Structure formats: structure tokens, C-alpha cells
Length: 196
Image 1 (cartoon, rainbow, N blue to C red):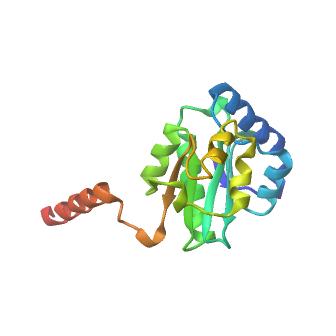
Image 2: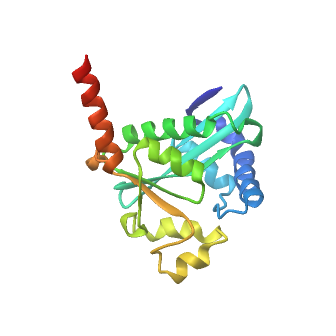
């Protein structure tokens, strides 16, 4: 399995990526926003995507969107082909795009919105914390991307303050301050140093 920054040669996978995102939303009955093959192609060509391939077979994908003059960056479209689910590929893709984002957009707050518990766990393990939507970007173009989600009416009725999704944020300026878990980890690390 090869997981890498998507390049122009990977544009040929745009249609299958778009279809996999759409069919996954239907199967799970969740509010995943649809993305056209043209939009996926643009993300690949701009170097703002990670793709996983098993030989020439599409296995997984995720892309980056920058908002608010690159002060905020979102990871969107995380998808794993049904043939490759259940082997930890989503976590590998998410970890790679997270690290790539920190290099490409240093200092940016990284966020995502999701209804999926597995994605919430992956995000939490990477240092994201659940936040209210008011802590996410206020860029109207981001929220416009939610229009194809079946839960968009909830978002509009609440004036973008809440939805069915959970907002999660990684703030590099608060690195290491992951609440109680972060403090417990620092105690654990200090204890290990004292034992040695």
C-alpha cells in the first residue's frame, strides 16, 4: 500500500473517489457532502490531497481546504474504498494528511466536522478537541460546501452554530494542552523519566 501526496497522474481516480464518497454517504445514511470529480481533480492538481493506492487500485483519499487566508485548514473527503476498510487505512491517511498540512500550512488551525465516531477518535488521537462551530472558520465558502449534505437545514436553522456533525479543532498554539488527557500523559512521561 502506498500513501502519498496526490499528483497530476492521480487525476484519473477523481471519478471513483467522488463516487465512493457519494455511495458511502448513501450506505451509511450520514450527511457527507458530495464532491464532484472536477472538484477532486482540482484538489489533486493543487497538491492538496493524499491518496492511497494498492498497485493501480484506488484504496483511499483525503483532501485539504484552506480558509480565512490560510488561518484555518480543514481535512475533508476522508474516504476508504470498501475493499480496504477495517485495516486501519483511514487512520494512516488522516495521520499523513495531518502531518503534511502542518508542513504546508504552518501555524494554521486544523479542523474538521464529522458525524463518524471512528473519525472523531482518529482526530482526538492526533490532538484535536471537540469545539463549538463558533471556534471554526467563519468563511462563508466553507459552510457553502455543506449545501449538498442532507442535514444542511439544521445548519441553516441554527445560523451555523450547530449541526448533526461534531466540530473538532487542532490548534498548534495550544500544543500539548489537551486537557486532562494531556496532563495525564505529561505525568506519565515524567514518571517514566524518574524511573530511568
